[in-house]
Amino acid sequence: MKKINAKDFQYDEKRPFSSKETATRIDPFYTDEADQSRQLDALAERMDQAQNKMHADEHYGLLVVFQAMDAAGKDSSIRRIFKGVNPSRFQIAPFKKPDKGDLKHDFLWRFWQELPERGNIGVFNRSYYEEVLALRVHPERLKEQSIPKNLLPTNEKTLWKQRFGDIVHFEDYLFRNGFPIVKFYLHVDKKEQGKRLIARLEDTEKQWKLSPTDLEERKFWPQYMQAYEDTVNATATRQNPWYVIPSDDRVNQQLIIASILTEILESLPVRFPETDDKEAKKLINQIKKQDSQ
Image 1 (cartoon, rainbow, N blue to C red):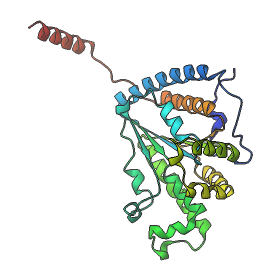
Image 2 (cartoon, rainbow, N blue to C red; image 1 turned 180 degrees about the horizontal axis):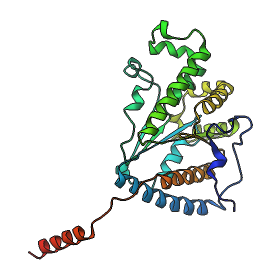
Image 3 (cartoon, one colour; image 1 turned 60 degrees about the vertical axis):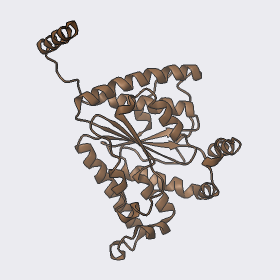
């Protein structure tokens, strides 16, 4: 069976991303769900070991960003992929529409508050990219941000170009400080999304997840696809690339994401602190002496 190659899903300025020309379903990297589970468990063990080394080294941290349309599999992927990671070194921040307090600050402010510490993995379930996705589809919401009118470009294209630039600079800054960013866009077909939304509505325990407003957003599907395409192309860099994940098959989706994350964690130039055997033996003897008293 073909192995997962992260570069097949990577966008880092070398090639343009096209929403229409990029598959939402590909041949599976598993034979059945039992095989997928075995592979994920093996990747989770490697991920935990790599994260343990990163934590001991205390120089790097990792930010993982998930962006997608509703029902693309963000929550289920996060839950399954990070199942084996030490929870004391892992933090997740879900982001919804900004509240009144958030709107009193610049658009990146609330995201700064949730960045991971060195040695930790931080996950953003939605992120600052909503500021060039949802806001681009609904530019009327910009009024809520109270930006001085004299500072707003008269040309809307200029505004989004400025925000793309702000985001790239923000991510470059984090990278230069030891916090690389892994960005996943879960690319799902509209009809597949529709099936999943219907399944939610037919499940009494999941009906609460949907509202009429959520369904209204489906009317803007073409606009969202264009916004995602432009966003990936404008903010994919060599240091902080995007990974576009075919997401009609959730099982395959989780395997691809876990494989990419494990590979990135294992590639970080970190190591366990050097130990002093003499000092270790001294401490062992000290413990034995304490226990013999």
